[in-house]
Image (cartoon, rainbow, N blue to C red; front, top):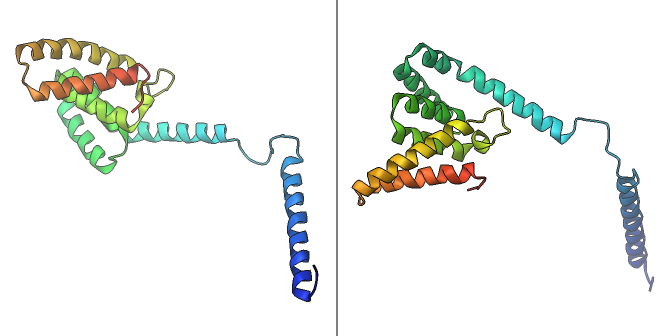
Length: 180
């Protein structure tokens, strides 16, 4: 079987690989399943990232909140539009836009804004999240479905009302725990 130097080198290489593999497996499993104390855990890293994101959101949207509290809803919407263009993947702007539009009585547009925000980040319908707007969204869905039901019965061929009902049903399913 070991006829020449090439065969002997192949067997030696195979033996070294096997010994290395056994040593590698032993060192990885040899700690008895204990966690290493070298760095922060994944849960801690996630929590820190979540807190820093919440702080960034608070800082970014502070001018909008200030304008909103002063009653300058139109100016707040313009500022939000600017921020939404600058940060299109950030859901908080759409949620704030939905809140402002609901306060102004533009329910159809508010529903669209909430849907965009919830699609980008489902934390806004999670009751345990500090970002949760669950109660506001629930109230909007309840009132919206009543209103849209009446409007659809008066005008059953209206496609925009059917699309609005579909968006409300999407929010309702997300509130019930459904996912996309």
